[in-house]
Figure 1 (cartoon, chains in turn blue, cyan):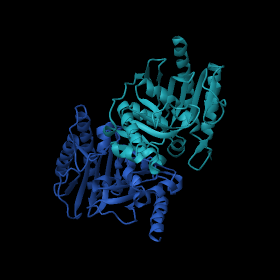
Figure 2 (cartoon, rainbow over the protein chains, first blue to last red):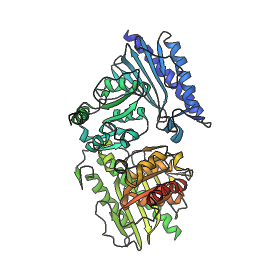
Figure 3 (tube, rainbow over the protein chains, first blue to last red):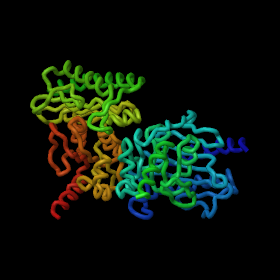
Length: 263
Length: 263
């Protein structure tokens, strides 16, 4: 089994490197940008083409698996049984459109609902973060990633999504106040990378399965906690208000949520 | 005169490169961190040592000038007459402490209150942004920086400071809503770099003179507007609620401020 996972990992890395080259190639031409649910929820020709490319590759590697893709070119999932691949072809599409930087290609591979392998490809910096329990660690390209220090909320910076802060969802303003400060990057994948680099201690955002599938595998492998904002396991078939944090910061944040409930 | 400025520029670049080496050297040892006004307002041994190093160098280059430094090792300024150097030895000290990245060394040189040369050194990426009217442009190391596209607020991302957003100072939440989204980096210098790269269209924050002295020179040279949030010139002897933006976005934001006044 483990040898199969090793081979699969090698194949996925090759697929992602080809996907990155395709994306860079397409970025030389003007993007075709469309709105999905509103003017801040974008999709481009590159998101769509890359998802189709990735799903075709996944079908070749793993013909019996289910595939869930952000742009809808995969399967309609009703269960996480068996092997499930969860694909975000461009995470941080607004950054992709406005910055041509700070976005990621992401794949998470789950078996019967349990994360096995995760991939977050920082395209512009050409660093592929990958790993999971089947590989026994996490790597940034060839370099092993060590577990972030288990610091308390007060001792580190926290990544956030802008709307949550502005609307003060789930006591975000209190959480930010208690932390050392807030940073906003605009991409869940880049936020996971910031946590792996020790630049932030966590991240809070409303996320769809493809936004967090890869990140959850990598975080868990490094001892970083991933849960809903009230400490429950994520539902990977739905959207969640996700809390990613060091163990100590998770405890601090869950306490803030609990204090409010007891009012 | 222009030749003098050219020579001065060459000397300042040499001074800043030496300062960067000193900072990198000191980062190999544990930092000594102290709080200034509160637990989110930090100063380290490196801020202090670097300010002393820079001011000593400036005194050698320009003995009759006044020097204003964040950590207080310069002069006590009561006027901007003559030549004034404004120094931020580490801009983004919280990032410096928590991330060892995303901070800058900055110098602005003013003559009778008018910006002449500006320097923002992204230490970890080793890119020195420098320029001004006396050089006729802005460069990122040796590469000329072109003027950012003059886009409207709705068409770009805006940099912000967390507290302004949380407390909704100066209609920040409406400004963010009308933009394509908010990003937070934690360093005024890095925000200026993001604008020069075209990644954001502007930045709004409460800033001290050393936070914006270099940036104001570079922005003005590139046609990006720097004013207070109500469109007035900055007072470089005091703190200001600063609006940096493309011409179109500045107009959009000033309109938001004006609409409120008329209520």
